[in-house]
Image (cartoon, rainbow, N blue to C red; front, side, top):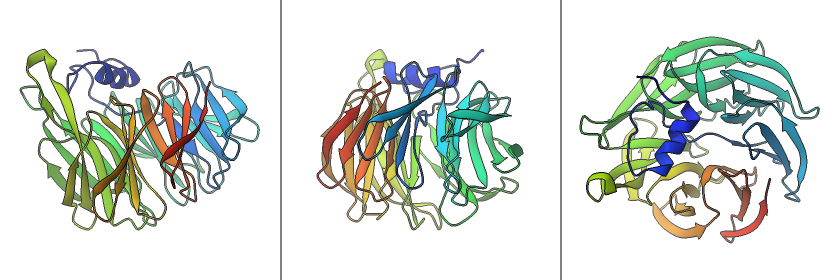
Length: 336
């Protein structure tokens, strides 16, 4: 069976009540938002999905647009030198943000859905499908150094301070309901597993780590309500100890939690619900919901500034929403 492009798979999932869409192995919210290391600029995929909008984090005004003329499926910033990476057309474009031009293209030979950079900026991790898997790119040599074939990868996150990566994989059950997922910790020289855990009836869509690297937050679909074609998903968040990948807390959320982020202090976790158009604020100490903030429809990606005072949310129409993390109120929008 021919599979649809990965970005379309995610859009299909958002537009129908089905929990798993036949013909789409990789159901990953696109990483269409990135913040530079010092928090001065925010990069967001522009309307039309073929350009990057550069937003001043202080004024929330657009200061530049970077046209790429390819469909953009992922963005990431190198924390060591500020280089911007954009995924599109089965390759990684390396962009100097000061000049706004792609200086190199790293071919991957696979459809790309998500990007992440390690803390030292030496490795770029690429989540991809068709063929399904994860690849590691040497950012200095600008070439792929290792690739792991992994069925139905759905999320990844890079821990602070160590050269590892967490990878989530998912498989639907035979009846089309929510099946079993596996979250693995991989070392990145050969992408060999260090430890792993299986999670019953959980479809992971997003991962985040607290700053200490001791807690892993996984958001996704835990079940469904309704009957037949009228079924709608039920979302939830799991909190795992990274030492043994043991679940220490779980919390029901909205219909479709698309992404999760943790603030630099490690005191708050923020979860986007794509179906409801909301931002849920969680206490990482009590594992309780503190507040639910209504935002614009179609939220897909989330990031925080370096100080943790602002939450940035990118939407399917290219809009960037700014939420004050102290008051949990929307304070601005940057529109295409």
